Length: 369
Ligand SMILES: *[C@@H]1O[C@H](CO)[C@@H](O)[C@H](O)[C@H]1NC(C)=O
Ligand SMILES: *[C@@H]1O[C@H](CO)[C@@H](O)[C@H](O)[C@H]1NC(C)=O
View 1 (cartoon, protein in one colour):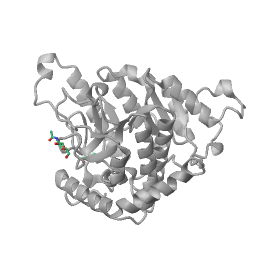
View 2: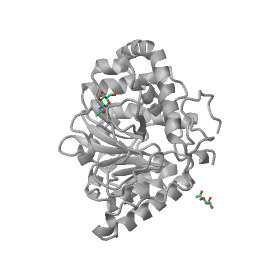
View 3: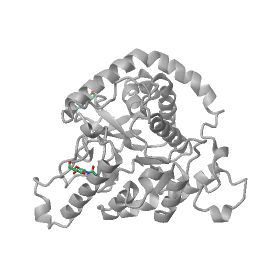
View 4: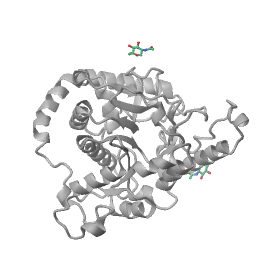
């Protein structure tokens, strides 16, 4: 699959696979430079785009296949039962009392038995106070295979229209298909916010070991995990990772998600996460009044920067890992480590020497595997 020509802002440096802080600082610097350069035209562009936004149906609901939701049986053949209503229904069913849902996305490559989605669900079942959260998880399928697999293993499934784009294969990092999928996801998340639902979005390659809610900030519109955390929740120098975030539905977050989505036009070839790391500095974000909180990697870590203390860890992301085989390999070892930790008596659990055996096959240098 051809890689689209793109600038080098976000490419992991294969030459220095382990020197993440330096890499992260460079990325932050580059993102800041870019942001400063384009901040003004961006804000103008966004305002122009906004006036069009409500008229467009960027999701192409009409083009959706007919197996769209779980409750298909009672809705067979009813044209009136639009995809939009199906989305409303699944959101309502999965919602917590305060209109919060947990969302993940899935394509066929991650859906096969024994693949990423099984590990994801397994992590909820074996985590501490996480199994009941499965009642609030909606799996958003990108294709019909993923949808069928979802229905086999979970009770809140929804399929997104893809307008002829095939999202079923494994998407290599930063190919055009991969980027398309990421931006579709972002546009979908904006729609969820507009419907009045707050969400935790989690990539399926994030293992949930503890309930994250006690570790969120009471204030903060958008709370986001990091590839690199600088030690202060409001310091914009932390490098966000778009794979895990908690977003409250309000006018500021809806405005920000529209701004973020429209910003893709200024950064062709970039991932939504890189664009986030550029626009977080944009004065327009301050104008909106959006409060961003970066989540500590001690609780919400990943292979880029692991949460080392198993007594604290909430989630662990198989980030900084390219290639599905490597990812599954290391996720399995991570689950084994977690289960052996859980089986220890309390006195041994407290030992600070306990940590992960991963990353092994996952590392930045494995990106071309
Ligand atoms: C955290 O960072 C913000 C912004 O850089 C700064 O204003 C604040 O004083 C910092 N807080 C602490 C406790 O260092
Ligand atoms: C993981 O790495 C080991 C050692 O380098 C190698 O033998 C094995 O094939 C790799 N496994 C995967 C799934 O990439």
